[in-house]
Image (cartoon, rainbow, N blue to C red; front, side):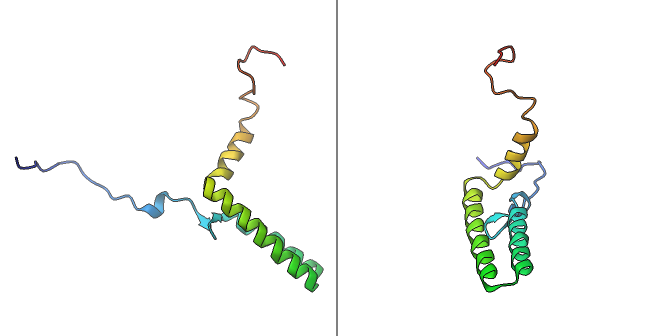
Length: 99
């Protein structure tokens, strides 16, 4: 049997449009925020110790953020949504239960 030709329109979905935006393998905004904090630490104190400390702190935090992104790339957004909806969803089994 010959296959019939499909009349459905097809559209290609590029992988880059559905992937989360990561920088160094971690959440982009958090990496940039920690980099900004490290740069502020370095340029406010202006010593070699602060430069080393800022670099070490940034490398450690980026490593932790990479582990977080490896577990779930959208973890930051999910956590912020969880915090925002906390007043509406009580941590009880039923809404009529009292604490």
